[in-house]
Each structure stands twice: as structure tokens, then as C-alpha cells.
Image 1: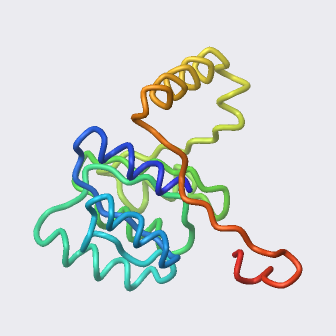
Image 2: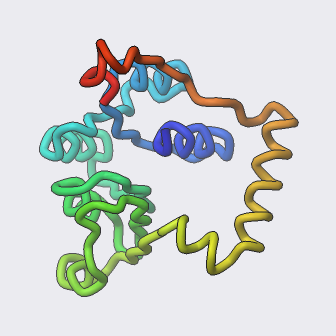
Length: 159
């Protein structure tokens, strides 16, 4: 859901993006939004790296919003331009600032922990929620697609 919401926001502000998604319905959703040919696998870091390199050609990414772990963090740093920024919102296998410095001193790394940000800056969360509420009321934003699963029969399909 975070990826779909971020892609919708980037589309709203006119930013050119590449998206990594797993489920076919998410690919379909993003293709309908105008990202046909710009969605890549979120299941295989190698496939993502190859696809992103092909899409970028000689270019590099300005920024990355990442919630995936394992190879995706390293690949994301490799795809960033000098001065680019990786914003990490994942909770598993998050890199330390020291590891990031060893891997890519030319890129910035920001670990975002919304749970602690809410506690440390409640004014920011209030302002953000008011902004989202106003955009929803103006019908600029809308709910994400939802798929329901029978937990007893389809527990594996849900994940």
C-alpha cells in the first residue's frame, strides 16, 4: 500500500517514477495510472536491478523510497545518482548509517520511523493528517484498491 500511495502522489506532482510491485493487481493498478512499462519486480532483487538499469539507461535515480530489505537496499544505492537520497521506511534489515557510509558515501540515507516521529513531532503528524484530509475531500486522493481474503481458506494468498 505504501508504494501505491507514493506512486499516486508522484503522479499527482508530475514526477517520473519507477515502481517495484509484487502482486499482478498492483501492476495493473499502476499501469492504469500511466506507469505501463515502468513497474518492476519487488520479489527478486536481481530482476529489479536489471529492469531498473534498462529503464534508466545511463541515468540514475534522484531518490528512492524503500520498504523492502535484502538486495533491494544495495541495489537502490547502486542506482542513486551522486547526491541522491534513499528514504528507508522498512523495519527489517535496515542498514546502519555506518554501513551506508561504507557502501555509498555520495548518497544520503534517511531512516524514517513514523511511529517514533508521531511521538517526537505530533505537530507534524497533525499537519500531515489535515493536509491528507483536505486532499481527500477535494477528491485529489482516494482509497487504494482492496482485495479481501477468506482467512480460513486463503491465508497464504493474502500474503
